[in-house]
Image (cartoon, rainbow, N blue to C red):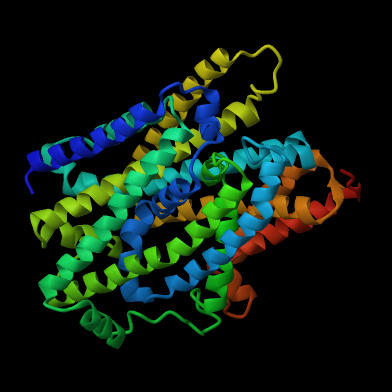
Length: 485
């Protein structure tokens, strides 16, 4: 593909984003930014959340995993669906009943200010590390395959994306993101489906033949029955369930979109439909992986480093210009969706939870708006420097470990919310931060030493459940007396 064609495509896609932004910011105010005036159609939120939940990691990593892990990822996805039911039936009614703008306000009502700040802090830490990592993966591919050819430094590439994301989320916030997510979801899913058909044609095989060939090579195997395997199906299912509960139901970024729906019933319809739609969508990503690996085997494709390079390598170096553009549009969508909602959620959490501007007497809407702008820009700069830092580290294993550690910070949120909902005891609020620091640290130590301590058992994603359990035990230790509402 020529650099001119790539640049033109990038500008066209960005123009579409800005057209949507322009439409959604009309008569925008703080309520528009934080909650979309609670007027978002549930079906638009549900469709848009697909792209937001997939991100660049799914777009590139899931297809690449098929050769090593087959379709075992699907069991995790089935667990996701169970988690969405928990969110729809337990968490969403709580959030709507309390009329929350940020979900961590519940922790203040239930425990106290220290717990409230702790929950908000862990969300911001998790999102800063996790979102920066997801965006790094996507922008790094664009840098290697596109922008390096133009001699553009990596820092400039990241800066360009952050400026563009800032510009279209600056005023409209969550209202803009609800609608831009629909565009990004469309391009990401279209890129996968179109690529499947293009590669199938190159292989000279129909979809049924590809499925049979993939099955004969073991790519379509879902159930792993070895209990010591990290992909053991029960581990995968329950890990998927709890990952969804914490990384969607206890995550301000994802819940802010749900809270923008007109009412609880619409938010629940959004969550149920979103959960069911994700099953075929993730299956399509895995099927793409099988198709790409068959192609790689037939045409002796060599990858630069890891399996994450499978999709970009074949799309940009082996297939047609149209296939390359299709991948490029999908990747651009993943880059935007990795950061836009996060910037809005981080800003909302900091302005409301940490600065407490909505609760302070005499603070005008105009002052909140000005401070919101400053915070929004500040978080964009922080994300920019974290991504550049990942590039400077230049160690994929270390960066992946940082991303994994960020996942541990959701465990305390799981423990806090579970305790608050189901254990009717009060806690010594000032000790909650101590418990929430110790629990992920102990979980991490247990995970890296589990084979020696637990007779060869290796933790996978289910370490999140252990983390939450340790937090729960710690909260019981510092609890006192019965909680009364």
